[in-house]
Image 1 (cartoon, each protein chain N blue to C red):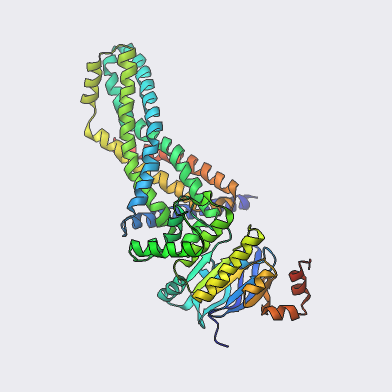
Image 2 (tube, chains in turn purple, blue):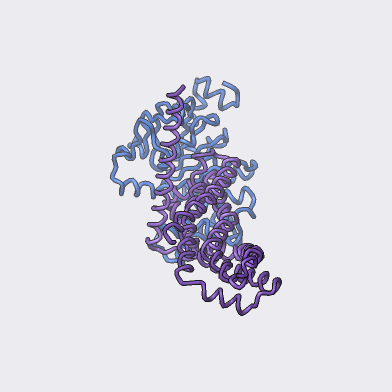
Length: 261
Length: 246
C-alpha cells in the first residue's frame, strides 16, 4: 500500500519532469528558429493581426472597466483618509505595475491562446502536422516560431494600451463621476509613474507572451500525447492550455515582482 | 529482377500492447505501382509511415537500394526522403492556406526556386488535375473530389520519384474513384515515379497496380500480380477479394 503510493508519486514526478523537458525543448527549437533565415515575415504579420490587432477591442473593454472599478474603489478608500487627490497615482501604479500586464495576458490567453491550442490540436489530429514532416518542413518553425515572435511584439503593445485606457477609466470614475479635479488626477499620474514602473510592466508582458504562446502551442502540438486523437482530445488540450497559462501567469507575476521591488 | 528500391525485412512495430506489424517482409521495385490491400486496422498506413520516416520500426530493417536505412548517413536519409511524397487519407490540406498556397507549400518552404517558377509549376499541376480558377479558394470551399485532386497536385508538385498514396479514393463516388485511379495511372506512366497505394478498392485497384501485396495479421501473406491473385488458392486472399468474412 505504502509502496504503491510512493511508486505513484514517483511516476507523477517523472511524468512532470518529462513534460517540463518537452516544453523547454519545444520552446528552444522555436526560439532558435527565430534567428534562422528565411525570416517568416508574412506569417509573423498574420499572427500579429490575429494575436494583437484582433485583441484590441477586448483588451480596451477590460481596460476601461478595470480602470473605472479601481477609480471607484480607490476613491472611497482614499477619501476616508482625506487622500483622494492621490487617486491618479493609485490607479496608474496599480495598472502599470500589476493589473495591466496580468489582465492583458489573461485576456489574450482567453481569446488567442485558446485558438492557438485548438487550431494546432486540430492540425495534429487531422495529420496536417505529419504532412509538414513529409514535406520536410519543420512544424515547430512553421507553426510556433511566427506565433512567438508575434506574441512578443503584441503583448507589450496591448499592455500599454490596457494601461492607458485603464488610467482613462480611472479618470472617468474619479474625476468625471466623483468630482476629483482633473488636473490633480493627471498631475499625480504623471508625477508618480517612473520609467522603472513602465519597464517592469513590459518585462512582465514579455515573460507572459513566452509563457502563453509556448504553453498553448505545446498543448495543441502534443494533443495526441495527452488526450488521444479526437475532438475530445482537442477540447481537453485547449482547456488545459488556458487554465495552465492563467495559473502560470499569476505565479510568474509574483516571482517577477519579487525581483522588481 | 533488379534489386528492390525499398525492402522491409522482418519489420515489427507495436503501439503499447497492440502488435501491428509482426515480422513484415516486402519488396518495392523502382518504377512500379504496388497496391497494398488488407482489412482495416491491419497496419497498411503504418507501413507507409515507416517508408516516409514518420514511424521507426521496433525491430527488423528497412533497406533502401540494399542499404539499411538506419545506418545511412543523415544526408543520404534526407536526400532519400526528399524523393518521397505522401498523399494522406484525409488529404491533410491546410485550412488557413488557399489552394495555390497549399500546392506551392513544399516548393515555397524548401526550394530556392524563384516565385515565377513556383507559380509555373503549381499552375501546371493544377491544370493537369483540372483545378481551374480555384487558386484563391480555401479547402473548406471545395468538394471532396476537388480536395483529393488538390492533395494529389501537392503530392506531385515536387516531381517526386516515390509517391505513397494512403487510401486516395476514400469518400469518393465511383466516378471520382475511377478518375483518381486513372489520374494516378496516367501520371505514374508519364512521370515514371514509384507508387505505393494503400487501397480498399477491389477489384479496381488491380487494374492500376502492377503488383499487389496483401497485409494480414501483421505480415504480408501475398505478394504478386493480379494474375497471381486470381490463381491463388489462399482462402484468406480469395475471401477478402470477394468481400467475405475470413
